[in-house]
Structure formats: structure tokens, C-alpha cells
Length: 98
Image 1 (cartoon, helix red, strand yellow):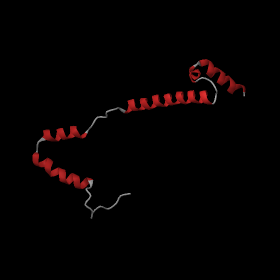
Image 2 (cartoon, rainbow, N blue to C red):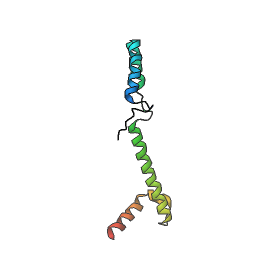
Image 3 (cartoon, one colour):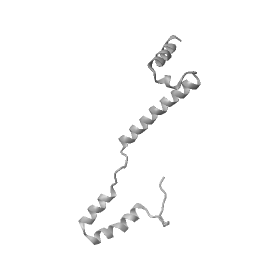
Image 4 (cartoon, rainbow, N blue to C red):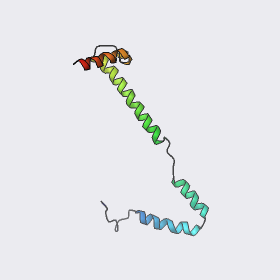
């Protein structure tokens, strides 16, 4: 929803562009414009791919910790038994038989 800002003191994109254009044209220095363009773009500190990997690792860790806590409290076993293959074989056999 776009609001009419003609009577307000809030700067709009068009007003800011009008204010910046005379200052850029007065200097006439193309080097100044290229430096300004370089500063306008910023690099990400943590790239998106690394962020996605961090989230996936945190999800896996949360699942493992949740399984350990659940198996220790509700299953009555030891928390480290969740990491053993025999435990998961018993669980899947139980699911398949019932």
C-alpha cells in the first residue's frame, strides 16, 4: 500500500535522488562516482551457503540431543545407547512387527 507523502517532511527515494544528482554533476569527477559505487555494495560476513550449512548442522545436533534425552527419560535406557546401531535395529524391528 503506497501512501501519498507530498505534504510530509519524510524523504522519499525521488527526493533523495534529486538532492544527490546536483552534487554528483557538480564535481564531474568519474573517479568519485566509481568509488561511490564500490562503497554501495557490501559483502556478506557469512555467505548464505555457510549459513545454510550451519542451520543444517544445528538441526542434526538438536535431533541427536532430543533422541538421547527422549531415550534416556522415556525409554529407560542410557543416553549414549541412541548412537549405537543395535538400538535402531531393535526400534525398527519393533515398528515393523506391530
